[in-house]
Image (cartoon, rainbow, N blue to C red; front, top):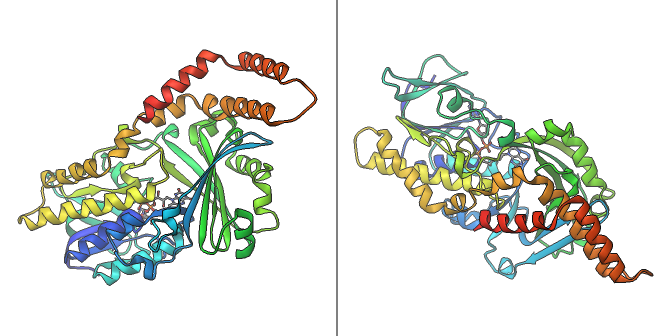
Length: 433
Ligand SMILES: Cc1cc2nc3c(=O)[nH]c(=O)nc-3n(C[C@H](O)[C@H](O)[C@H](O)COP(=O)(O)OP(=O)(O)OC[C@H]3O[C@@H](n4cnc5c(N)ncnc54)[C@H](O)[C@@H]3O)c2cc1C
C-alpha cells in the first residue's frame, strides 16, 4: 500500500515517460512511475532510429552499456512499383566517427535498459500496475491517481501522462479527442532471423554498420502508407504502415499489404531463407502540429504519443517523445523550485520550451494533409510513371527511344495530366518549406 505523497507521478514507461521520470529523479524530485506492462518495453516491438544527441542530454555516457543494435551509416529511400525500384542512397561518414550520431535500437531491449537507469536515478518504478483513473479535487485539479493495485488515491503534486497513442486517461478526462481513423496508421511488422554475416553481406555492411530502407509506391495501392526495412544485428525488421481510414476504404488488410511487400523482387532476396520470429501490430498517431491537444492543465501535463507529438516527415517519434518528456520534466522542476504548488500557468513553460525546441513539428504541419488528400498521386501514379520513364531510358531494346517516349507521354496523359503533376510538384515543396 503506497501511503506517501510524491512530487510527481508518471503514467507509462515508454520513451516519453522514462525521459520525464529520469529527468525529475536526477533533479532530486520524489518520483513514482507506473507501468501496466510486465516491464518497460515488454510489449513494444518497435525497431527504431535513436538520435544520439537526444539520449546524450539524458544519459551522457549511454554508449557504454545501452543495448544498441548497429550504428546507422546509411539510409535508402525507394520509390517502388511491383517489378522495380528507384533508389536514393545516402551514406554519411560522420557516423563512422568515434561517437556515432544515430543507432538502430530494438525497443523491447532499449526500454528495459532505460527503465533501469530511471530506477538507478532514484525513482520508484512499479510494473504491472495500471492507472485506472485520475483523481481530481472539486475544483478539477488533478491530485493523484487510482490504480488497479490498491484502493484509494496515490497523491502527487503533478501527474505526467505518458500513456501512449490511445491516451485513455486524457480522453476520459476530456482533454483530448479520440483519434479518428484518418488520424492513425496501423503498422504491422515482422522480425526475420538471419546470421549476422548474411545480413552484412546482403546489405553491404561492415561490422556494426546499419542501414534503414524506407519504401513508398505501389505496395500501398494508393493508400497513404510506407514500407520499411531495418538491418539489425541478427535479424531484419520489416513492415508496412497504412492509414486506418484507407484500410477501411479499400478493404485491404495490413497482412495483405505486408505479404505483397515481402514478395516484391527488391525485398524478397533480403529476407530469403530467414526464420520468422515475431509478428506484431500497433497504432501510430498521424495528426501532426495542427491537432496537438491541450498539453497541460491544473496538476497535469501530457507528453509523447499521448500528446500526438508526431514529426510526420522524419522518422523521429521516439526522439520527439524523449524531448517532450525531458522538457516537461524540466518545466515541472522549475515550477517546483519557484516554490508553492504548481499551477497550470507554471506548466505553460513546457509548451514554450517545446515550441522552441521542436520547430520541425511546425515546419511540416501541412504535410499530413497533403499526403492524405493526394495519396494516389504521390504513392501510386507518380512512382509508376517515373519507373516506366527510367526503364525506357535505361533499357537497351529493339524499339526506337522516340517512339517509347511518345507512348509514355500518352499513357501518362490517360492516367493523369501534366497540370496535375506540376500542381503536385508545387504543393509538395510548399508543405515542406
Ligand atoms: C506495445 C507497443 C508496440 C509498439 N510498436 C511500435 C511499432 O512497431 N512501430 C512504431 O513506430 N511504434 C510502435 N510503438 C509506439 C512507440 O513506442 C511510440 O510511438 C514512441 O516510442 C512514443 O513513446 P511514448 O512513451 O509516448 O509511448 P509508448 O512507447 O506507447 O509508451 C506508453 C506506455 O504507457 C503504458 N501505459 C498506457 N496506459 C497506461 C496506464 N493506464 N497505466 C499504466 N501504464 C500505461 C504502456 O504500457 C506503454 O508502456 C509501440 C508502442 C507500444 C506500447
